[in-house]
Image (cartoon, rainbow, N blue to C red):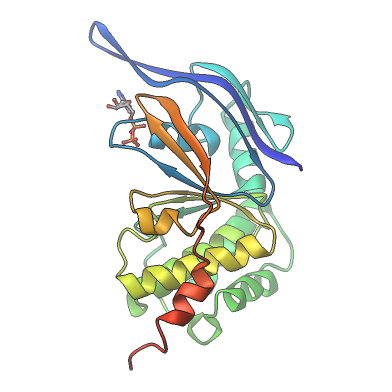
Length: 243
Ligand code: ADP
C-alpha cells in the first residue's frame, strides 16, 4: 500500500506568556492511499493543529512529515504553497466559496493558480461529478448549503489531488444533506481518493474506515471501523428527497 502521509514524532508548541502549550506532543502515524479517516477528539486536543500541519498550512515545531514521499517538514512558504495546490484538496465547514463568482469559476480557481490548460473543461467535469451541471452558472447565494458544499468538493478534486482534507464538512448541514455529502465522499473514496475528515459526530465517523482519536496533543486511539456504515447505502435507505 502506498503511503500518502507519514508523520514522525510531530510536535507543535505554542508559547503563551511563560507557559508552553504542547498542541501536538509527539504524533506518529501513517495514512495510506485509499484510506477514509475520521479525526475525532475533544476540543483543544490538537485536531486542527494536526490538520494544519498535514495540510501544509503550518509548520510543526519539530518532527518529520512526508507527503506522497516528499519531505515537506523543511520546506519554505513558496514550496509549501505549491505542494498544497498540487497534492491537497480542502473542504471547510463554511464552504469558503467566492461569493460573487459562479460555481464554475469557483471550481476553476485552483487550476488558475496551477496554470493548468483546458480549465473550463476540467472544471465542468468536476461539477458534473458532484451532480451540479444544471447549477454551474449560479453564484453561491443562489445555491443551498448542500449545493455549495458540492461546489467546494468539486473545487477540492479538480486538481486531482492525492489527498482530500475536510474540516467538519457537514457541520452546517441538516441530516439529509449531511448524508448526501458523506455519500459523495464515499463515492470519491470508492474511486481511490484518500480522505481525512475532522468530525465530532459519531454518525459521520461511522461512514469512515478508520478513526484516529486525539487527546492532549497525542493520538489516544487509532482504530479500524469494523461496523462501517456505507454512506451511499445509508442515503438510499432514507428514500427519495422530499419535494
Ligand atoms: P482542536 O482542534 O482539537 O480543538 P487545537 O489543535 O485547535 O485543538 O488546539 C490544541 C491546543 O493548542 C489547545 O490547547 C489550543 O488552545 C492550543 N492552540 C492552538 N492554536 C494556538 C495558537 N495559535 N496559539 C496558542 N495556542 C494555540
